[in-house]
Length: 379
Image (cartoon, rainbow, N blue to C red; front, top):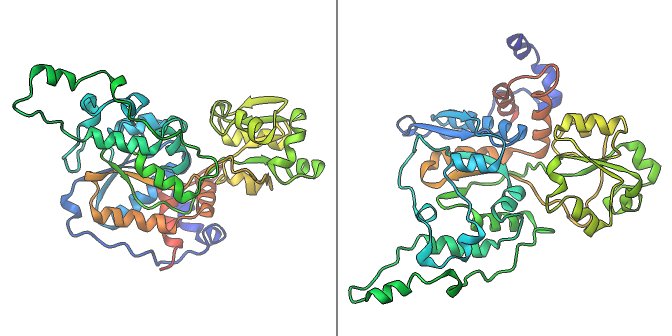
């Protein structure tokens, strides 16, 4: 059934992916790719990151690499563990250099370690919040802690035992965190990426971010927008006591969630309903079970239902560009170039179209969608 669908729907997909043409973005074949080993990509934590993982895989195969996509679970902690990339904690940031733990300070010198995931697509804003404990840690302090953790303390031969002991004084004798907590609200996309570069776990780095993003948005039906004469979150704030808000369960505790809506906009909904499935949440919004919904901007349901995305005047919802995180020593330059080619062409509208292709009654596989996306691009 899938093969008949794939063979016969190129003309129908013109509306979704612009045009079915044979040209593809230029990806250079790495002559050493076949000897490198398998590059492992995590599917990430969402439907969208899984789609992007398949785009990366397609590009890497075009460049000559052997690629495997693996499911590392649905949390950042799980994929970071698969990458052996432990975020620094407040205790790590506050520790004096001599007390840096071996787990933090150890650096991998292996190339293409088969026991680790090499690449994971994620969202810039939420990744930054995760690595900074929802903004309570400063990226500058994290960067300083990483620098300290990679230093090997030396002891002069003449150093006495008592002097050596003094070097392991309690953390209170060496307070090092100096920067205030991170204020993510209103940060630009480039500011977020700059902060991410500082906050990344040891031995990891970022490749180019795409313009494509999938961020939180408060959404209402057109009927609700017209009833209250609203087009922004600020407009709806005074009506919140009469309205039910539906959102993923985590929204209740996130830095941009219920407390932020109250603090930033003065919006206190009559009721909060936790709905983790975005399709189900869209249905509840459409049938007026909830009147406001936190729906991600790449969801096809927004276009398909003509929902109104409320303007976020105060930038409560930070940028969430798609970005590849890599094990620095395990991804060769040819592979980086191939993935950067994908990032350079991927747009938010592409995420919407790919989401429509890979969900619903007549969905196709992520691998087929990746092929269509590449075939839709011109040089």
